[in-house]
Length: 364
Image: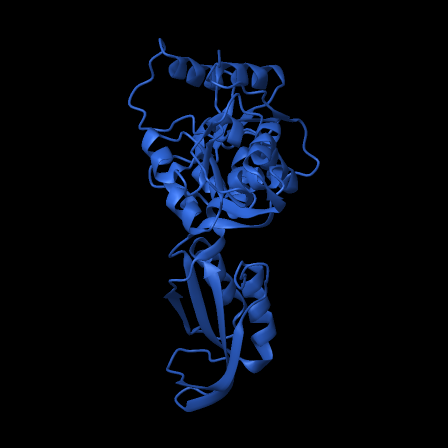
């Protein structure tokens, strides 16, 4: 498989359109037409990661944090970034990054953190807004099933843990075929009434082209009537942060011990908290202090994230147990999730290596 073919498959599952406006997910550098020889997964593209990729003959690095994050205006060989870029090009190594789009993926950063903590009934803390659309089309009765299935296969009709969701109502469509037409039913120049089924189904906006293409390919009419409506519903399943339940309530000290044993931070910073027990927990891997208000509104007694500032702790005091467990520590294990995702696409592909990233911060 070529690198670009893998990129396409990843983006079918984790679309680039999910990334935040400030981000730079996707292909970074290299030759996307190269055949894959090996993949190395890393949080950050460091000298150690690149050297390991070279040693293990991996010509693709999949990183969580983008290698090129801000606008690249020059390549300075006296700086680390310039040296790494040239080393990758000299060794035919491509770099691909999945960052905030992977943060919002249902099996992404925060979901993995929630699962690691043993949470159940896990849901998205801040679901994506204004990303759902509805397709309405009208189809002759005999072709309804094939058209509907084509829409489902293209990605329509998923609501939560349900798929193949649609609403269907019967009626009669009317039309008159003009000159130079080839009508599927009816006659040129005569008004025709056809028993039709109105099919309604929802889809995430990034799948619109595939769904419309499937509709046009399977619908029997020469001119297909369809409408697409934007919806205000949240896109549940995709979004930042996760929230879930511990199997049973625990006291604060026991909960902090759980965090230490599972996330393995060098240390924890916590807000003052007056509640006696914790069961509902919100998490956001990486820098998630901006989700603090959502965590409080969710009814969680604790919120685990990183890069928490002084005033964030003040805001949380006596409202929620706010825990800064470290950026690296709350994200590192998600490399396993990335590897699992690619393994679904390339089930027999080797080697795939997770780089032993080291934290940038030393604790003394």
